[in-house]
Image (cartoon, rainbow, N blue to C red):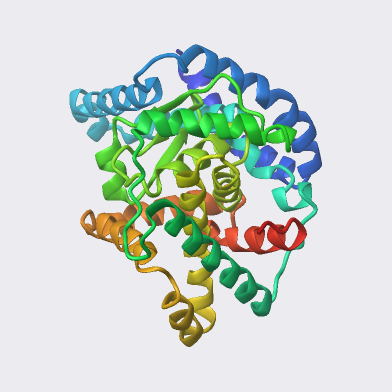
Length: 356
């Protein structure tokens, strides 16, 4: 490849960024022509191509590219030292190609119409509404825990293998897709990440590879949380990028599953977020509400907390800061805090579609 072409590709990054930001100001355009138009074909194609393979091709590609990049730097280190300009030009070229591929394959979904607008939900809620919803959720979570264990003090152990959880999640999507057509999911590509240990140290439950459309789930996370995380990653596959939205989709699909263990996992998941929001607003009220949880539910929360604490390390905040910057650069102003914005969707959805 000649230098002029390399320079042109590297410089193309600037107009690409401008174009993406311009498109981002027209969410209806992105929604109709990309998220509901082009993207479903791209997504289905890659799920058909890679979904049947037991290993994550995306993970293998990442590993290969990292090794290749390190090898290149080591072999050409002397040349790089003598002349940095071609090296930085090559980095710019790689970034330009990656930026284009990322947005073409999946990333433009960050700029689609918000899910709250699609579901005709309110944008805000009051503290009173939050408390009512949380109290209702506590009753539901306690009830499900007791139905499963017949003992309010016993921890809930989900008895399924991760493979079985994958299948039950797919069944849940199939059923829920009958209610909301835009949640339809076919040609699954759902896998346990080969980087699960690394993901755990980084503090992540999973991710979608945007270049191969494979949903990666951290195989180390406790089964108590596994169903919702699986639902979350499929939410990314069907074209939703915002973390609060896929958190909500993961909850909805899991909560509407016929399986009692899935219903419990979803209720406890939603409750953890609503209680966290209560804690930010009124610590005394939080303590009062938390004390009303069955001991078995509290034990599940402690199990999850101990799991993450066991993998705490000095680099985790660095990885979180990088991901925070990535989210902010992709139309999520709250960055990593956007996960917690699920509470707005939870409360307003329950107000419009109350479920006992």
